[in-house]
Length: 510
Image 1 (cartoon, one colour):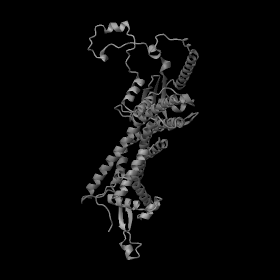
Image 2 (spheres, helix red, strand yellow):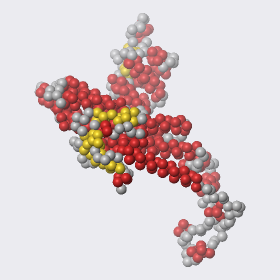
Image 3 (cartoon, one colour):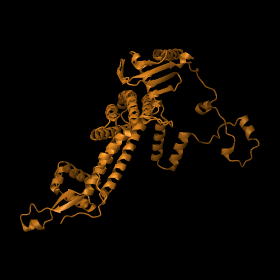
Image 4 (cartoon, helix red, strand yellow):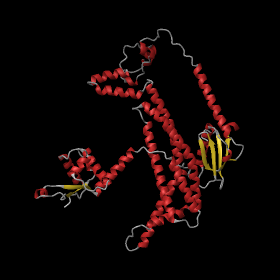
Protein backbone atom coordinates (compact mmCIF):
# COMPACT_ATOMS: atom_id res chain seq x y z
CA UNK A 1 0.00 0.00 0.00
CA UNK A 2 1.34 3.51 -0.72
CA UNK A 3 2.34 5.70 2.20
CA UNK A 4 1.07 9.27 2.16
CA UNK A 5 -0.41 11.82 4.53
CA UNK A 6 -4.09 12.72 4.33
CA UNK A 7 -3.54 16.00 6.23
CA UNK A 8 -0.84 17.44 3.96
CA UNK A 9 1.37 20.27 5.23
CA UNK A 10 3.52 20.84 2.13
CA UNK A 11 5.05 24.11 3.41
CA UNK A 12 6.05 22.77 6.84
CA UNK A 13 9.58 21.96 5.66
CA UNK A 14 10.36 25.66 5.09
CA UNK A 15 10.43 26.42 8.83
CA UNK A 16 11.74 23.03 10.01
CA UNK A 17 15.35 22.43 11.08
CA UNK A 18 17.61 21.37 8.23
CA UNK A 19 15.23 23.06 5.76
CA UNK A 20 18.00 23.48 3.16
CA UNK A 21 18.24 19.67 2.78
CA UNK A 22 14.48 19.40 2.32
CA UNK A 23 14.56 22.12 -0.34
CA UNK A 24 17.42 20.38 -2.20
CA UNK A 25 15.53 17.07 -2.17
CA UNK A 26 12.29 18.63 -3.45
CA UNK A 27 14.16 20.51 -6.19
CA UNK A 28 15.67 17.17 -7.25
CA UNK A 29 12.17 15.69 -7.56
CA UNK A 30 10.99 18.76 -9.50
CA UNK A 31 13.90 18.45 -11.95
CA UNK A 32 13.18 14.73 -12.35
CA UNK A 33 9.54 15.51 -13.13
CA UNK A 34 10.67 17.91 -15.86
CA UNK A 35 12.60 14.95 -17.35
CA UNK A 36 9.38 12.87 -17.16
CA UNK A 37 10.81 10.69 -14.38
CA UNK A 38 8.08 9.88 -11.87
CA UNK A 39 9.70 7.71 -9.17
CA UNK A 40 13.05 8.12 -7.44
CA UNK A 41 14.80 5.77 -5.03
CA UNK A 42 16.84 7.13 -2.09
CA UNK A 43 20.08 6.38 -3.93
CA UNK A 44 18.76 8.31 -6.98
CA UNK A 45 18.05 11.33 -4.78
CA UNK A 46 21.52 11.09 -3.23
CA UNK A 47 23.07 10.99 -6.72
CA UNK A 48 21.12 14.12 -7.69
CA UNK A 49 22.46 15.84 -4.55
CA UNK A 50 26.01 14.57 -5.24
CA UNK A 51 26.31 12.92 -1.83
CA UNK A 52 26.29 9.41 -0.43
CA UNK A 53 22.98 7.71 0.26
CA UNK A 54 23.06 8.08 4.02
CA UNK A 55 20.54 7.87 6.82
CA UNK A 56 20.02 11.64 6.78
CA UNK A 57 18.62 11.54 3.23
CA UNK A 58 16.38 8.58 4.06
CA UNK A 59 15.11 10.31 7.22
CA UNK A 60 14.44 13.51 5.25
CA UNK A 61 12.45 11.55 2.67
CA UNK A 62 10.38 10.04 5.48
CA UNK A 63 9.61 13.50 6.93
CA UNK A 64 8.57 14.82 3.53
CA UNK A 65 6.18 11.86 3.25
CA UNK A 66 4.72 12.78 6.64
CA UNK A 67 4.17 16.39 5.54
CA UNK A 68 2.49 15.28 2.31
CA UNK A 69 5.14 16.54 -0.14
CA UNK A 70 6.09 13.02 -1.24
CA UNK A 71 4.34 9.69 -1.66
CA UNK A 72 6.13 6.43 -0.87
CA UNK A 73 5.24 3.21 -2.70
CA UNK A 74 6.69 -0.18 -1.89
CA UNK A 75 9.57 -1.05 -4.21
CA UNK A 76 9.17 -4.72 -5.17
CA UNK A 77 10.99 -4.53 -8.49
CA UNK A 78 14.34 -5.70 -7.00
CA UNK A 79 13.08 -8.35 -4.59
CA UNK A 80 15.07 -11.60 -5.12
CA UNK A 81 14.68 -13.21 -1.73
CA UNK A 82 12.43 -13.34 1.32
CA UNK A 83 14.85 -11.09 3.20
CA UNK A 84 14.62 -8.47 0.44
CA UNK A 85 10.83 -8.67 0.62
CA UNK A 86 10.75 -7.93 4.36
CA UNK A 87 13.32 -5.12 4.07
CA UNK A 88 11.59 -1.76 3.69
CA UNK A 89 12.29 -0.37 0.22
CA UNK A 90 10.31 2.51 -1.26
CA UNK A 91 9.91 4.46 -4.45
CA UNK A 92 9.19 8.14 -3.86
CA UNK A 93 7.30 10.60 -6.05
CA UNK A 94 5.86 14.10 -5.69
CA UNK A 95 2.25 14.30 -4.56
CA UNK A 96 -0.17 16.73 -6.15
CA UNK A 97 0.08 18.92 -3.02
CA UNK A 98 3.88 18.75 -3.10
CA UNK A 99 3.98 19.62 -6.79
CA UNK A 100 1.63 22.58 -6.22
CA UNK A 101 3.79 23.77 -3.31
CA UNK A 102 6.93 23.62 -5.49
CA UNK A 103 5.21 25.66 -8.20
CA UNK A 104 4.09 28.24 -5.64
CA UNK A 105 7.58 28.53 -4.12
CA UNK A 106 9.17 28.82 -7.58
CA UNK A 107 6.67 31.53 -8.56
CA UNK A 108 7.35 33.43 -5.31
CA UNK A 109 11.14 33.25 -5.73
CA UNK A 110 10.85 34.40 -9.35
CA UNK A 111 8.59 37.33 -8.42
CA UNK A 112 10.86 38.43 -5.55
CA UNK A 113 14.03 38.27 -7.64
CA UNK A 114 12.49 39.71 -10.78
CA UNK A 115 14.02 42.91 -12.04
CA UNK A 116 11.67 43.46 -14.95
CA UNK A 117 12.32 45.50 -18.09
CA UNK A 118 10.85 48.30 -20.15
CA UNK A 119 9.63 46.46 -23.23
CA UNK A 120 9.78 48.74 -26.24
CA UNK A 121 9.23 45.73 -28.52
CA UNK A 122 5.99 44.93 -26.66
CA UNK A 123 4.69 48.42 -27.46
CA UNK A 124 5.20 47.78 -31.16
CA UNK A 125 3.58 44.33 -30.91
CA UNK A 126 0.52 45.77 -29.15
CA UNK A 127 0.16 48.42 -31.85
CA UNK A 128 0.38 45.78 -34.62
CA UNK A 129 -2.21 43.55 -32.92
CA UNK A 130 -4.58 46.48 -32.47
CA UNK A 131 -4.10 47.37 -36.14
CA UNK A 132 -5.09 43.81 -37.10
CA UNK A 133 -8.13 44.00 -34.80
CA UNK A 134 -9.14 47.30 -36.39
CA UNK A 135 -8.99 45.65 -39.82
CA UNK A 136 -11.22 42.81 -38.59
CA UNK A 137 -13.62 45.28 -36.96
CA UNK A 138 -14.22 46.95 -40.32
CA UNK A 139 -15.32 43.63 -41.84
CA UNK A 140 -19.09 42.89 -41.80
CA UNK A 141 -18.55 39.34 -40.48
CA UNK A 142 -15.07 38.91 -38.93
CA UNK A 143 -13.67 35.43 -38.31
CA UNK A 144 -14.28 34.61 -34.59
CA UNK A 145 -11.18 32.41 -34.41
CA UNK A 146 -8.89 35.20 -35.69
CA UNK A 147 -10.52 37.72 -33.34
CA UNK A 148 -10.14 35.42 -30.33
CA UNK A 149 -6.50 34.57 -31.08
CA UNK A 150 -5.63 38.25 -31.59
CA UNK A 151 -7.30 39.23 -28.32
CA UNK A 152 -5.52 36.44 -26.43
CA UNK A 153 -2.16 37.49 -27.89
CA UNK A 154 -2.92 41.14 -27.13
CA UNK A 155 -3.89 40.36 -23.51
CA UNK A 156 -0.74 38.27 -22.99
CA UNK A 157 1.56 40.93 -24.50
CA UNK A 158 -0.08 43.75 -22.57
CA UNK A 159 0.05 41.80 -19.28
CA UNK A 160 3.76 41.15 -19.84
CA UNK A 161 4.37 44.84 -20.59
CA UNK A 162 2.52 46.02 -17.45
CA UNK A 163 4.08 43.43 -15.12
CA UNK A 164 7.60 44.02 -16.42
CA UNK A 165 7.23 47.81 -16.18
CA UNK A 166 6.04 47.51 -12.57
CA UNK A 167 8.88 45.13 -11.67
CA UNK A 168 11.43 47.36 -13.43
CA UNK A 169 10.34 50.50 -11.59
CA UNK A 170 10.46 48.60 -8.28
CA UNK A 171 13.98 47.30 -9.00
CA UNK A 172 14.97 50.78 -10.17
CA UNK A 173 13.88 52.23 -6.81
CA UNK A 174 16.04 49.62 -5.09
CA UNK A 175 18.96 50.63 -7.30
CA UNK A 176 18.40 54.31 -6.50
CA UNK A 177 18.38 53.51 -2.78
CA UNK A 178 21.84 51.95 -3.21
CA UNK A 179 24.25 53.14 -0.54
CA UNK A 180 27.06 50.58 -0.20
CA UNK A 181 28.89 48.18 -2.50
CA UNK A 182 30.70 48.66 -5.80
CA UNK A 183 30.39 52.40 -6.25
CA UNK A 184 32.44 52.55 -9.46
CA UNK A 185 30.35 49.77 -10.99
CA UNK A 186 27.13 51.50 -10.03
CA UNK A 187 28.23 54.79 -11.61
CA UNK A 188 29.14 53.01 -14.86
CA UNK A 189 25.84 51.13 -14.80
CA UNK A 190 23.99 54.43 -14.30
CA UNK A 191 25.07 55.75 -17.70
CA UNK A 192 23.74 52.68 -19.52
CA UNK A 193 20.55 52.70 -17.46
CA UNK A 194 19.77 56.35 -18.26
CA UNK A 195 20.28 55.70 -22.00
CA UNK A 196 17.98 52.67 -21.72
CA UNK A 197 15.23 54.69 -20.01
CA UNK A 198 15.58 57.55 -22.50
CA UNK A 199 15.09 55.16 -25.42
CA UNK A 200 11.97 53.70 -23.81
CA UNK A 201 10.53 57.18 -23.18
CA UNK A 202 10.97 58.01 -26.87
CA UNK A 203 9.37 54.68 -27.92
CA UNK A 204 6.52 55.22 -25.46
CA UNK A 205 5.79 58.66 -26.94
CA UNK A 206 5.86 57.23 -30.46
CA UNK A 207 4.05 53.88 -30.06
CA UNK A 208 1.78 55.18 -27.29
CA UNK A 209 0.29 57.77 -29.64
CA UNK A 210 -0.41 55.12 -32.28
CA UNK A 211 -1.95 52.75 -29.71
CA UNK A 212 -4.18 55.52 -28.32
CA UNK A 213 -5.41 56.33 -31.84
CA UNK A 214 -6.11 52.66 -32.61
CA UNK A 215 -8.02 52.18 -29.34
CA UNK A 216 -10.21 55.17 -30.17
CA UNK A 217 -10.79 53.83 -33.69
CA UNK A 218 -11.73 50.37 -32.37
CA UNK A 219 -14.24 51.84 -29.92
CA UNK A 220 -15.76 53.79 -32.79
CA UNK A 221 -16.03 50.61 -34.91
CA UNK A 222 -17.64 48.67 -32.06
CA UNK A 223 -15.01 46.77 -30.12
CA UNK A 224 -17.61 45.05 -27.91
CA UNK A 225 -18.72 43.00 -30.91
CA UNK A 226 -15.20 41.52 -31.06
CA UNK A 227 -15.13 40.95 -27.31
CA UNK A 228 -18.48 39.17 -27.53
CA UNK A 229 -17.15 36.83 -30.23
CA UNK A 230 -14.16 35.91 -28.05
CA UNK A 231 -16.49 35.30 -25.08
CA UNK A 232 -18.67 32.96 -27.16
CA UNK A 233 -15.69 30.89 -28.24
CA UNK A 234 -14.54 30.55 -24.61
CA UNK A 235 -18.07 29.67 -23.45
CA UNK A 236 -18.23 26.86 -26.01
CA UNK A 237 -15.63 24.97 -23.94
CA UNK A 238 -17.41 25.56 -20.61
CA UNK A 239 -18.32 22.46 -18.58
CA UNK A 240 -22.14 21.99 -18.40
CA UNK A 241 -23.62 22.27 -14.92
CA UNK A 242 -26.75 20.25 -14.13
CA UNK A 243 -29.32 19.44 -16.77
CA UNK A 244 -29.69 22.92 -18.29
CA UNK A 245 -26.74 23.16 -20.69
CA UNK A 246 -28.11 26.31 -22.37
CA UNK A 247 -28.25 28.20 -19.09
CA UNK A 248 -24.71 27.12 -18.25
CA UNK A 249 -23.54 28.40 -21.65
CA UNK A 250 -25.20 31.79 -21.09
CA UNK A 251 -23.57 32.14 -17.68
CA UNK A 252 -20.15 31.18 -19.05
CA UNK A 253 -20.51 33.64 -21.97
CA UNK A 254 -21.54 36.45 -19.61
CA UNK A 255 -18.58 35.76 -17.29
CA UNK A 256 -16.13 35.63 -20.22
CA UNK A 257 -17.53 38.83 -21.72
CA UNK A 258 -17.21 40.64 -18.37
CA UNK A 259 -13.61 39.45 -18.11
CA UNK A 260 -12.77 40.74 -21.61
CA UNK A 261 -14.43 44.08 -20.86
CA UNK A 262 -12.26 44.42 -17.76
CA UNK A 263 -9.09 43.67 -19.77
CA UNK A 264 -10.09 46.20 -22.43
CA UNK A 265 -10.69 48.81 -19.73
CA UNK A 266 -7.21 48.14 -18.34
CA UNK A 267 -5.72 48.61 -21.82
CA UNK A 268 -7.58 51.93 -22.21
CA UNK A 269 -6.50 53.15 -18.77
CA UNK A 270 -2.90 52.43 -19.73
CA UNK A 271 -2.84 54.53 -22.90
CA UNK A 272 -5.81 56.95 -22.71
CA UNK A 273 -6.64 59.65 -20.15
CA UNK A 274 -10.29 59.89 -19.15
CA UNK A 275 -12.70 62.80 -18.98
CA UNK A 276 -12.38 63.03 -15.18
CA UNK A 277 -8.82 64.26 -15.53
CA UNK A 278 -7.13 60.99 -14.56
CA UNK A 279 -3.83 60.60 -16.34
CA UNK A 280 -3.10 57.42 -18.28
CA UNK A 281 -0.69 54.83 -16.89
CA UNK A 282 1.61 55.43 -19.87
CA UNK A 283 1.91 59.11 -18.95
CA UNK A 284 2.46 58.25 -15.28
CA UNK A 285 5.13 55.72 -16.28
CA UNK A 286 6.80 58.35 -18.45
CA UNK A 287 6.82 60.83 -15.56
CA UNK A 288 8.12 58.16 -13.16
CA UNK A 289 10.92 57.29 -15.59
CA UNK A 290 11.93 60.95 -15.90
CA UNK A 291 11.87 61.31 -12.11
CA UNK A 292 13.98 58.15 -11.81
CA UNK A 293 16.60 59.65 -14.11
CA UNK A 294 16.81 62.73 -11.90
CA UNK A 295 17.07 60.58 -8.77
CA UNK A 296 19.79 58.46 -10.37
CA UNK A 297 21.80 61.57 -11.15
CA UNK A 298 21.32 62.83 -7.57
CA UNK A 299 22.38 59.44 -6.20
CA UNK A 300 25.54 59.43 -8.30
CA UNK A 301 26.30 62.96 -7.08
CA UNK A 302 25.93 61.80 -3.49
CA UNK A 303 28.20 58.80 -4.10
CA UNK A 304 30.82 61.04 -5.69
CA UNK A 305 30.66 63.31 -2.66
CA UNK A 306 31.23 60.31 -0.39
CA UNK A 307 34.21 59.17 -2.45
CA UNK A 308 35.69 62.67 -2.40
CA UNK A 309 35.74 62.62 1.40
CA UNK A 310 32.92 65.04 2.11
CA UNK A 311 31.06 64.73 5.41
CA UNK A 312 28.34 62.08 5.54
CA UNK A 313 26.17 62.58 8.62
CA UNK A 314 24.38 59.23 8.31
CA UNK A 315 27.71 57.35 8.15
CA UNK A 316 28.99 59.32 11.15
CA UNK A 317 25.94 58.41 13.22
CA UNK A 318 26.32 54.73 12.28
CA UNK A 319 29.93 54.76 13.47
CA UNK A 320 28.88 56.50 16.68
CA UNK A 321 26.14 53.91 17.25
CA UNK A 322 28.71 51.14 16.87
CA UNK A 323 30.95 52.86 19.43
CA UNK A 324 28.06 53.01 21.89
CA UNK A 325 27.32 49.31 21.31
CA UNK A 326 30.97 48.41 21.95
CA UNK A 327 31.27 50.53 25.14
CA UNK A 328 32.35 48.50 28.18
CA UNK A 329 29.89 50.00 30.68
CA UNK A 330 27.46 52.86 31.24
CA UNK A 331 30.18 55.16 32.52
CA UNK A 332 32.05 54.75 29.24
CA UNK A 333 28.81 55.48 27.37
CA UNK A 334 28.37 58.73 29.36
CA UNK A 335 31.95 59.80 28.56
CA UNK A 336 31.37 59.04 24.88
CA UNK A 337 28.11 61.04 24.98
CA UNK A 338 29.82 64.09 26.46
CA UNK A 339 32.70 63.84 23.97
CA UNK A 340 30.40 63.43 20.96
CA UNK A 341 27.71 66.01 21.72
CA UNK A 342 29.50 68.41 24.08
CA UNK A 343 26.55 68.65 26.49
CA UNK A 344 28.82 69.11 29.51
CA UNK A 345 28.46 71.73 32.28
CA UNK A 346 29.71 75.21 31.38
CA UNK A 347 30.39 76.51 34.92
CA UNK A 348 33.90 77.61 33.99
CA UNK A 349 32.51 80.21 31.59
CA UNK A 350 32.26 83.81 32.67
CA UNK A 351 28.68 85.00 32.96
CA UNK A 352 28.19 88.12 30.87
CA UNK A 353 26.33 91.22 32.14
CA UNK A 354 23.53 90.58 29.65
CA UNK A 355 23.00 87.09 31.06
CA UNK A 356 23.04 88.41 34.64
CA UNK A 357 20.39 90.95 33.67
CA UNK A 358 18.18 88.17 32.29
CA UNK A 359 18.68 86.10 35.46
CA UNK A 360 18.08 88.95 37.90
CA UNK A 361 14.35 88.38 38.62
CA UNK A 362 14.28 84.60 38.12
CA UNK A 363 13.24 82.50 41.15
CA UNK A 364 15.69 79.86 42.35
CA UNK A 365 13.13 77.11 41.78
CA UNK A 366 12.93 77.54 38.01
CA UNK A 367 14.23 74.46 36.07
CA UNK A 368 17.49 74.90 34.20
CA UNK A 369 15.87 74.06 30.83
CA UNK A 370 13.35 76.88 31.34
CA UNK A 371 15.97 79.49 32.29
CA UNK A 372 17.57 81.88 29.74
CA UNK A 373 20.64 80.22 28.18
CA UNK A 374 24.24 81.37 28.42
CA UNK A 375 25.11 82.85 25.03
CA UNK A 376 28.72 82.35 24.03
CA UNK A 377 30.66 82.86 20.84
CA UNK A 378 31.35 79.83 18.62
CA UNK A 379 34.92 81.09 18.43
CA UNK A 380 35.20 80.80 22.20
CA UNK A 381 33.91 77.23 21.97
CA UNK A 382 36.62 76.25 19.49
CA UNK A 383 39.66 78.12 20.79
CA UNK A 384 38.86 79.28 24.33
CA UNK A 385 39.31 82.90 23.25
CA UNK A 386 37.01 85.53 21.77
CA UNK A 387 39.74 86.86 19.53
CA UNK A 388 41.13 84.98 16.60
CA UNK A 389 44.90 84.81 16.40
CA UNK A 390 46.94 84.82 13.24
CA UNK A 391 46.55 86.22 9.80
CA UNK A 392 43.00 86.29 8.41
CA UNK A 393 42.13 83.93 5.59
CA UNK A 394 42.63 85.15 2.08
CA UNK A 395 39.39 85.93 0.31
CA UNK A 396 38.88 83.47 -2.54
CA UNK A 397 38.34 85.08 -5.94
CA UNK A 398 35.35 83.32 -7.48
CA UNK A 399 34.80 85.72 -10.36
CA UNK A 400 36.20 83.22 -12.89
CA UNK A 401 33.83 80.46 -11.73
CA UNK A 402 30.85 82.83 -11.75
CA UNK A 403 31.73 83.95 -15.26
CA UNK A 404 31.89 80.34 -16.51
CA UNK A 405 28.54 79.55 -14.89
CA UNK A 406 26.98 82.67 -16.42
CA UNK A 407 28.33 81.78 -19.89
CA UNK A 408 27.05 78.21 -19.55
CA UNK A 409 23.59 79.41 -18.50
CA UNK A 410 23.47 81.94 -21.34
CA UNK A 411 24.57 79.33 -23.89
CA UNK A 412 21.97 76.84 -22.63
CA UNK A 413 19.23 79.49 -22.72
CA UNK A 414 20.26 80.46 -26.27
CA UNK A 415 20.17 76.82 -27.45
CA UNK A 416 16.75 76.29 -25.88
CA UNK A 417 15.45 79.49 -27.45
CA UNK A 418 16.82 78.37 -30.83
CA UNK A 419 15.08 75.00 -30.45
CA UNK A 420 11.79 76.76 -29.62
CA UNK A 421 12.23 79.04 -32.61
CA UNK A 422 12.97 76.04 -34.85
CA UNK A 423 9.72 74.35 -33.78
CA UNK A 424 7.57 77.51 -33.86
CA UNK A 425 5.02 77.39 -36.70
CA UNK A 426 3.09 80.26 -38.24
CA UNK A 427 -0.08 78.20 -38.22
CA UNK A 428 -1.14 74.56 -38.54
CA UNK A 429 1.22 72.42 -40.63
CA UNK A 430 1.54 68.71 -41.30
CA UNK A 431 4.02 66.70 -39.27
CA UNK A 432 5.61 65.58 -42.53
CA UNK A 433 6.45 69.25 -43.29
CA UNK A 434 8.57 69.72 -40.16
CA UNK A 435 11.68 68.60 -41.98
CA UNK A 436 14.90 67.35 -40.37
CA UNK A 437 15.30 68.22 -36.67
CA UNK A 438 18.56 68.67 -34.78
CA UNK A 439 18.96 66.63 -31.54
CA UNK A 440 17.95 69.46 -29.17
CA UNK A 441 14.88 70.43 -31.20
CA UNK A 442 13.93 66.75 -31.53
CA UNK A 443 14.03 66.21 -27.75
CA UNK A 444 11.85 69.28 -27.26
CA UNK A 445 9.49 68.03 -29.98
CA UNK A 446 9.16 64.63 -28.28
CA UNK A 447 8.28 66.34 -25.00
CA UNK A 448 5.62 68.46 -26.73
CA UNK A 449 4.11 65.40 -28.47
CA UNK A 450 4.08 63.45 -25.22
CA UNK A 451 2.26 66.22 -23.34
CA UNK A 452 -0.28 66.70 -26.14
CA UNK A 453 -1.07 63.01 -26.61
CA UNK A 454 -1.36 62.45 -22.87
CA UNK A 455 -3.82 65.33 -22.56
CA UNK A 456 -6.09 64.04 -25.36
CA UNK A 457 -9.25 62.34 -24.09
CA UNK A 458 -10.90 59.32 -25.76
CA UNK A 459 -12.87 60.26 -28.87
CA UNK A 460 -11.16 63.64 -29.31
CA UNK A 461 -9.54 64.47 -32.64
CA UNK A 462 -7.98 67.74 -31.49
CA UNK A 463 -6.10 68.69 -28.36
CA UNK A 464 -4.45 71.87 -27.12
CA UNK A 465 -2.06 72.07 -24.18
CA UNK A 466 0.73 74.19 -22.69
CA UNK A 467 4.05 72.85 -21.41
CA UNK A 468 4.65 72.71 -17.68
CA UNK A 469 7.02 75.71 -17.72
CA UNK A 470 4.52 77.78 -19.76
CA UNK A 471 7.02 78.44 -22.54
CA UNK A 472 5.25 76.72 -25.46
CA UNK A 473 1.74 75.86 -26.64
CA UNK A 474 0.94 72.97 -28.96
CA UNK A 475 -2.28 72.17 -30.84
CA UNK A 476 -2.56 68.68 -32.37
CA UNK A 477 -5.28 67.56 -34.80
CA UNK A 478 -5.76 64.08 -36.27
CA UNK A 479 -5.65 63.88 -40.08
CA UNK A 480 -8.19 61.23 -41.23
CA UNK A 481 -6.59 58.66 -43.53
CA UNK A 482 -3.37 60.62 -43.34
CA UNK A 483 -1.18 57.52 -43.27
CA UNK A 484 2.20 57.37 -41.58
CA UNK A 485 4.76 60.16 -41.44
CA UNK A 486 8.53 59.82 -41.04
CA UNK A 487 10.50 62.54 -39.25
CA UNK A 488 14.26 62.28 -39.81
CA UNK A 489 16.71 63.16 -37.05
CA UNK A 490 20.39 62.60 -36.39
CA UNK A 491 19.43 59.85 -33.92
CA UNK A 492 17.12 57.98 -36.30
CA UNK A 493 13.68 58.17 -37.88
CA UNK A 494 10.48 58.79 -35.89
CA UNK A 495 7.42 57.12 -37.43
CA UNK A 496 3.82 57.88 -36.49
CA UNK A 497 0.35 58.77 -37.78
CA UNK A 498 -0.07 62.02 -39.68
CA UNK A 499 -1.36 65.03 -37.69
CA UNK A 500 -1.78 68.75 -38.12
CA UNK A 501 0.37 70.51 -35.56
CA UNK A 502 0.61 74.14 -34.48
CA UNK A 503 3.41 75.10 -32.09
CA UNK A 504 3.58 78.58 -30.54
CA UNK A 505 6.63 79.92 -28.72
CA UNK A 506 4.91 81.83 -25.88
CA UNK A 507 8.23 83.29 -24.68
CA UNK A 508 8.80 84.94 -28.08
CA UNK A 509 5.15 86.07 -28.25
CA UNK A 510 5.42 87.82 -24.90
